[in-house]
Length: 85
Image 1 (cartoon, helix red, strand yellow):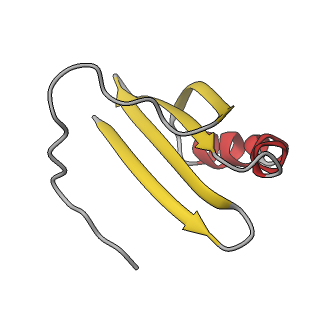
Image 2 (cartoon, helix red, strand yellow; image 1 turned 30 degrees about the vertical axis):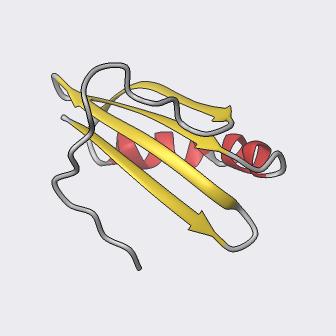
Image 3 (spheres, helix red, strand yellow; image 1 turned 90 degrees about the vertical axis):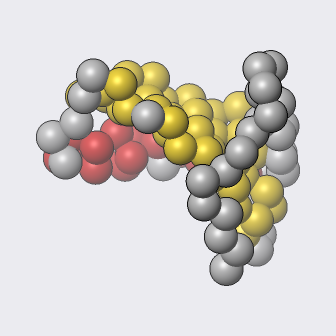
């Protein structure tokens, strides 16, 4: 399973996330568009790792990158659910 999330939070700006679950292992990638947001995400990544571990999940890669999430290379995305709050 793959879930893609997008947030535009006050003070943090646009953040996109891709969370993957494969064979009981969860991985997550985050993309922050504002330069100041990236260090904050990295600083708190250990908290996410601990929460996933406490939930009993095997943890794969957890990473943060600067910029927008790259566009999909295959096909057109058709979201199952699109919610705005």
